[in-house]
Image 1 (cartoon, each protein chain N blue to C red):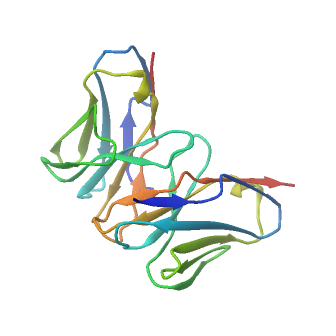
Image 2: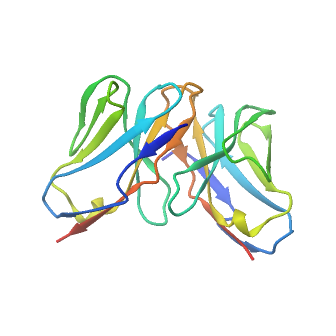
Image 3: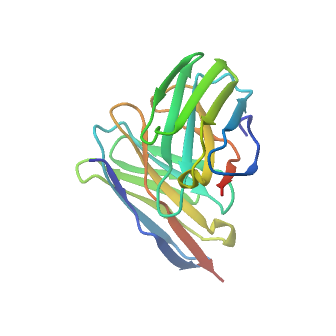
Length: 109
Length: 113
C-alpha cells in the first residue's frame, strides 16, 4: 500500500531550528513535495526534491534520501508566522500526490 | 498568486440533497484536481481532469461526480449528500502532471446535516 508518515505535532521556540521528518512508501516515486498550510487556509508550495540531497531556499531546506524513503524539512530562525501545518506528499508512478496527514508546528516565544 | 477561486466558500446542506461545488481558474492550466481534507487524514484525491471533458477517478471517488466543459471550470457534484461527506474541499491546478507544483484554491467548507 501507499503510506506517508510524519509526526502529528511538534513544538519549537522562536529563533530556534526545527526538523520535520517524513517517511514515504508509494507505488513508484516521482518526487517529494513539502507544503505549508496555515489554519483555515489553502496549502502553499514550499519545496520539491527528486534527487538525493539537500535543497536550500532561504530559511527553509528540504532533504531527500530515496534509498531510505525519507525526507525532512528544516526550518531555521523560526518566526511566529511559521506556526502552521507542514504537509509532506510523495508523487507516485501515476504522477498523483499521496499526502501525509500533516505536522502541526507550534512556535512558542 | 495563481488565480483560483472556489464557490461557495461555505455551505450547509441536508442529507440527501444534491450539492455542486465550483472551481474556476484564470491560469489556463491543463490539470485540475478536487481533494477533500479531514482531520487526521492527508489530502485525498477525489477526481482530477487532464483536459476539457477528460476526467478520471481518484482515491475516494465514490459518491462524487465531476464535469469539465471549459478549461477554466471544474465542477464537483455530490448527487445525494451524506454526513460522511462533511469536509473541506480544495481545488488545485497544475500546468502538467509531472514535477509540477499544484496551486490550491481557498477551499469550501461543506457541512451535511
